[in-house]
Length: 229
Image (cartoon, rainbow, N blue to C red; front, side):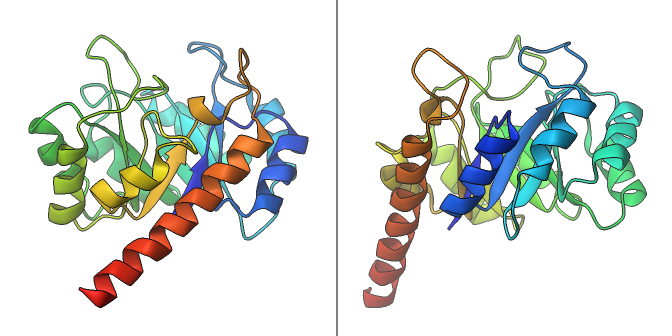
């Protein structure tokens, strides 16, 4: 079970979360158009703290693919994560980035809002290396970072019907990640809000550790159940 933590904002956080064993360490990149975006220069400093085998995932909420490509070339992340709303950034845009950024893994956020979400997920087959299944408000220009869960039955259907590995997000924390894994059976799980410190966007390392450990334990339990069935 892959684990992923957003939004890491300092090299110290990045190193500590790497040492916990989290697989993907996400940093929000931008010019300030969205809250909490870090400029490229600051993101580069955070990335220095990431220790392999943990991977640096750069999250872009902008739909400007030329800007995403420019920043990705500067930062050289292992993963380029596209978080713009689906009506603003389309599969053909993602395919262009995939062609131009050779060797980079591509993650695409998918809003889990109803039956249409399955079609959106399918439209990225052969383009995205990962899908991030996240909560969404229709009025938002970006997907996710709401700290609320969504309809797990839709996410489960995406996992079952779409070949691209899916990472489940949306209001997940140490308290509910095991239940979410049992319900959806994703390839991985993601946490932002529920692994933050209270009243802050800094990461709570104890919560991150408990999230990671709970996810790994739930994955082992799920595997044992499948073998005994």
